[in-house]
Image 1 (tube, helix red, strand yellow):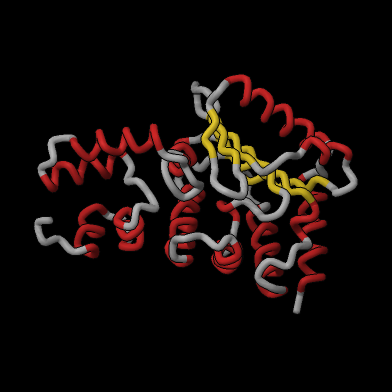
Image 2: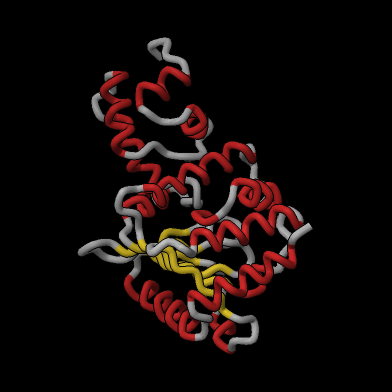
Length: 247
């Protein structure tokens, strides 16, 4: 339409060409701001915005698709629990690629990697969200991507842990609270607004807004955090395991 190439459109919207490709292949939905600008560019009179609203209501949102990236970008704090892989916002490119390749997604791996790295830009904001990530100890020992990838990833966590706005805590495998863990999730908190959560599973993710469900998730988070090592103890353990992964 209008003879605009993918690259030209990306430059017009000040975004990456890979993000435009994700829109074209249906793997991500443009934000309302982007759609408003696309509407103006193509003279669609608001049709694209209305279509997006319908898609959000009827589609199953994945971690790289739909509402969650927008929620994540607006949050003032993100509290998460992970048992098998590290949170997407804290992953290195090589680790993310290994995780996404293993997931056997229908989309192209590199597109998914680029989308995940795009999400991480939230950490570079002038006022980034406070990140509190609980990691079950076993995640430090899974050989995702091989020794070099794991060693790099763990040292990346150590570096991130030096930030005031990133708190990484390890829950020991022997902690009784691990029995409460039923799957990874993230709770997004907003200034003066209601919490929203993202619950992951083997098939797809789900954005959770029900008040009772959110209370249950917060209780699970608080229970596990009470059994976690302190921030300093966690970083020491991560450094120790990183040395064990050195090729």
